[in-house]
Image 1 (cartoon, rainbow, N blue to C red):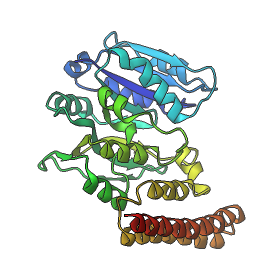
Image 2 (image 1 turned 90 degrees about the vertical axis):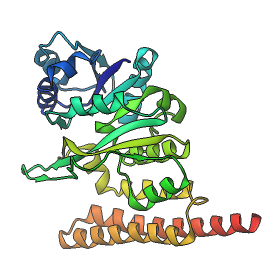
Image 3 (image 1 turned 45 degrees about the vertical axis):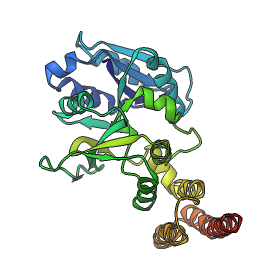
Image 4 (image 1 turned 135 degrees about the vertical axis):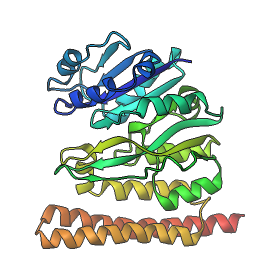
Length: 310
C-alpha cells in the first residue's frame, strides 16, 4: 500500500515552514511508511517553494515540488496534483499550507488507513481552530469515543445537508480508487467545495470514517480564501446551489429550514455591516437576501412539480 502526503500552497511563505516542521516532528516509523511528500504550488509569487525546499532536510520521505507556472485556483491545483499522483498511489494525505499537524497525526491516520473497510472513501478527524490573535477554539477530542463510519446513503445525505459540512479535505486521507469514482473537486465552488464533494461521495454510496480526535490546528487569517469569500457571501450562494441539487431527497420542511438558516446568517451580517458602516458588505447582504427568497420559491416549485409528476 502506497501512501503520500500532498500539501497545496499559494503564497504560503509565512506558514509553510511551520506546516513542514509539524510533519517532521511526526513519529519516525510513521514517516518511513510515507512514499513521498509533494507540494503542489499554485503559481506562488512569493518564496513559498524556496522556503519549503530549504526547510526539508529529511532523506525519507523525499520532498518533491509540483510547480504551476500561474495560478489555476485551489480546486484545480489539487485535482491536477491528485491526477499526477494517482497512477501509483493508494492513499493521499491532504494537507493545506495553513495547517499544523499535531504530534500523533500521522501515526493515527496510518493506523486507520490500515484498518479501513473497502467502502470507505476518506478518513477525517476533528481539529482545533487557531485564530489570528493566538486563541484556540478546541474541537471534539475524545480518545474514548469509537471511530465512526458514516455510511453513504440518503439518510446520511439528509443529515449532512441539515448539519452542514463535517468533512474537510485540508486534513483528510483520500482513497484514490474512490476519488476516481466520485470525481474531482468542483472548481466552480470557492467556499463549499468540500461539502459538495462529501455529498457526492455519500450519494455514490461511499462511506466516510471519522476520528473524534483533534489531529490538526486549522489556521484562520483575514487574507485566506475563505475570509475573502465570506465578505461577498459566497458561502451562502453556494449553499443555495447545493440545496437545489438535492431537493428530491429532502422534504419541504427541510428546504424551508435550510433557507431560514441562510436568511438568519445574512441578517446577522447585514446588521453588523450597518453598525460598522460597511457599505460594500451591506450591498452584498441586500443582494443575497433577494437571491435566498428567489431560490426558495424555485425549490418549492420544483418540489411541487416533481410530486405532481410522481
